[in-house]
Length: 251
Image (spheres, rainbow, N blue to C red):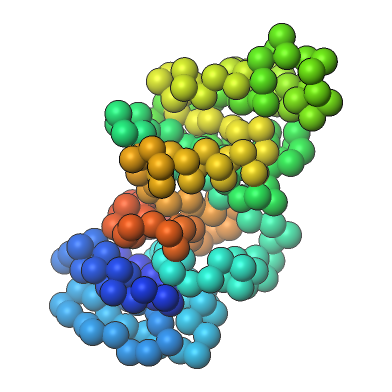
């Protein structure tokens, strides 16, 4: 049996409902919260005055096979995760699905991620590995802030185009300019121009465009940690993604 942990801060009811739906005889879910929560056959409760630390400590110690942030605060949770695994930054890659059923991995999705050619090239490599694990196309599109013909209109746009071309050349990816609507039909991995635009793509698709955010695995740590937005309507997709990654790790 796989054991997952999920952060249960604000809106505990939403987290508990998701845990009940995702849990099964193959997957046990532990809710890490400030107060004890209702338990059932496959859903347990871990309470602590620092649930974010308890969740990550148990992940590091191997007491759980994977973790989902749930409704725990992003800043303190991700900061503690970085410290626990000794990495200078976290590299997250989100699995998204459009309303038409097109699935793709998107990065960067954190506003402080993917601001250099080197970081984006590294995300290409990590994104392809994720796509391969899930049987998806690892063909990769690199987006920029405009079409190539827009060079000269603004220095920020110029830089994003130059960077995208360089990333594509270094990694064998395809520079798809600003045409994300075409890229999602062909590519399993999409690299946004920077963390801000990536975060906006994620939020627009999932919160305005009737798409699905399946969660964003952290790819530069050995443990399975799936980041999730507190604004999500539920966490079943993120728990299912964490379970799939955890099962893959134990094979």
